[in-house]
Every structure is written in C-alpha cells, then in structure tokens.
Length: 256
Ligand code: PGA
Image (cartoon, rainbow, N blue to C red; front, side, top):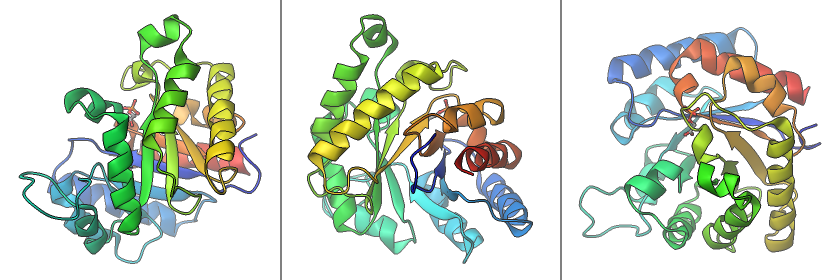
C-alpha cells in the first residue's frame, strides 16, 4: 500500500472557480473540521491567483498549505498577465501546480516550458507539483507509459528532490469526467514513475506521486491505497469542504 514513510498530500486545485465569498466559507469549514481532529495527511489548497492573498489570510497559521496553479519561468519583467514564482512565495504560497493538462492544452505549454517554470519555482523556495498524464487516444494505443516517461524526463528539472517536487499523475481522460483508471493501471503507472524518479533525481524514492482525475470521497480510499500513490490532486471535489475532507479521510484510512 501507498509508500512506507511517505506522508500523503491531498491537494485541491480550484481551477478557475469560486469567488471571494466561497473561498472564505470553504477555508472556514476546512479549518473547523481540522479543529475537531487532525488527519495524518498534508492538506493544500490552490485557489485562483486573485484569491491567494485572501486565502492566505483566512488560513492564518492553520496546518493547511497554500499553492498557486501556475507561474512564469522568469522572476520579473515584461510578461503581461503572468505571475512570477517569487510573488507567490511573497504571498505565502508553499506550492505551485505546473504543467497541468489544461495549461498544456489551453496555453500550448511544452514540457520544456514546464521544466523552466519548475526551476523558477524551486529557486523561489516553492514546491513544484509537476503534472503528467496521457490522453485517451494514447492509452488506447498502449502508449501511456512511454508518453508519461517522456513528460517526466522533459518536465522535471535536475534540481528536483523530495523536499521541493511532487509529481501528479493525471490521465487527461479522467479529469472532470467521472472516469478513473483501474487500480492495476494506476499502480503500473505509479511504479513506472517511481522507477524513473529513482534513476533520475536525488531522493527519488521519497518524492510524492499524487493521483488526479475524478477523485471523490467514494473512490479516494481505494485509489489512495494503491502502491506508490502518495495522495491526490483534486479538482471538482475540492470546491466543497465536505467532499475535500472526505477524500482526505480516505487518504488517511489508506495511509493508516
Ligand atoms: P477533477 O480534476 O478532480 O475535477 O477530475 C483533477 C485535476 O484536474 O486536477
């Protein structure tokens, strides 16, 4: 089960959803649940850029970490509309999601771009959550291991280690669709990613590998119990405190 010695991380990717009011309510509810008894998992919320400051204030001193959903590869400069990694660190972010499939698709981000962003994030003291995952066509063609291997090789910078990098395996066809791979397929992919990390980066045996794609309270415990699954990157279900907490409880059961 999971990976002995690695504490799970349950991360909420709010994407372009929510409002200032919703953010306050959600954080308040999560803090109240945390107050009733901590779980043996790390919790992270990644709101849209405009809400980071307010969420940082709302989190104030709680055990829930704050992250962003992207950053630029440069530390400053003429990049209208972009946000630099040191700015995120300034706001109290500890993490940044990079190379999510929606960024790779909507903004044409290549793995080289993701690696450059990850380098900037690490230099700013952030932990980079590097996302990888195959499309449905690639899986149907039996190419999923090869595709994800290439993404890992090209997106994870040489400076990566267990303290500054998390990998999120998110099959594109499972994101927001309600579909999930079988536990056997998740295990095969996570074992492959673990082997690559061990070969390529210092401390690769301890880097957290999250599963993402239609994680819900009802399937979290089963998915989180799979070998080499060290937590979840949660989209839709992270927008409701009850669901996000339910997933954290599922991860806790599997870790325990
Ligand atoms: P989902 O999204 O949980 O809504 O499928 C996951 C993600 O894109 O990170």
